[in-house]
Length: 303
Image: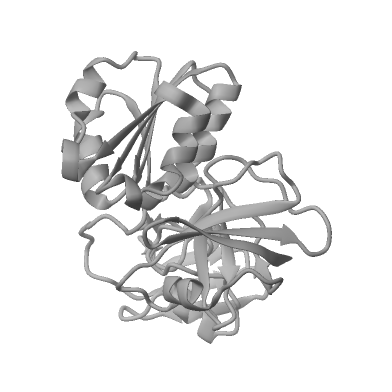
């Protein structure tokens, strides 16, 4: 974890504030567009937020937090209790499950607070000389973080759709006009992601979800996890997660979302076949143990 100072709290849209966190002990860890951090809040909760500032700025991180009315205590605490004034907060080293790949052309699709990973992607694409367009959707302009800032900086590359006035953009028409060399990046509510997956099925589409997609799996079966470094074997019962079983056995596995969307509980698998139930797409030899299980009776992990 890195120690940061809360330099600035500022409203950037209805129900959304921006936090600027400066390094308390010198330069902060580097990051690339699409990265996120875990922010340890003073109420003992840890929450994940996409970095939405400038990756070249090693002195500070910027995140934006929407006040979720169904908050589990994270966004509510940020909005009610965090204020400008030098409070020290711990922040993880950035992780990136949504990296921006090189391409000559990009279409970026953002819905509401989904603009946070997309904004630095747009800036990076423009800086690299690529053709880039942002389609930014929200209920009203007042609810859309950084809308004015993005239009000021990027001009007609940014298309704002306030759905109460204009309705939703025509994704099918956008797909039809898109070059086959283009990459499409999308972050927003589930309905928007579903529409993007349907419209851009013939294109290289990359999405980041706030919540896991609804999926069906076979009934849970018990399995054994052998921790190769300690030599200990841990039984995972059908009614518990692998993460909980390992935590109860004394292994402190970092975790946050518990839904397979943040990647903080990633562990290495050296033998056996995981059943991947996450929404990230675990790389070879890795798994996210908060939701994923085993297709074999035994997994060997690097713990």
